[in-house]
Image (cartoon, rainbow, N blue to C red):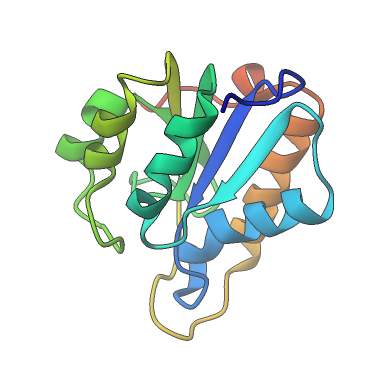
Length: 158
């Protein structure tokens, strides 16, 4: 099975919607499911994205974009591309079952381009609502995807 040729790639969202700003990924997935963008297929990996690795491998996308709330030392809602090789070194906050580096390493063999887009959270805690700045960041990511400005809209984390 290979991915439908109309898609540029897959967006894998990661996070837990019951933990405040950690729900940024699932919120983006929900928005993409309600208002799809033709060139992207979305898969919501939730807090256990390793459970969907087999689906991504089956689809054989040319590109994978992973979106997750990520502690980067920025202002809440700010968005950056993060080098996938640096994820393990940089991030102490991990609300997921397995480190994202495990997932990336599993998919590198099958997916030629893997990008990681982090959105800086403010509050991550059970039953906290998502902050307005992170919601606005999710909207900004959606708009950049829709207008095909992803690579020009966001810079790399230095």
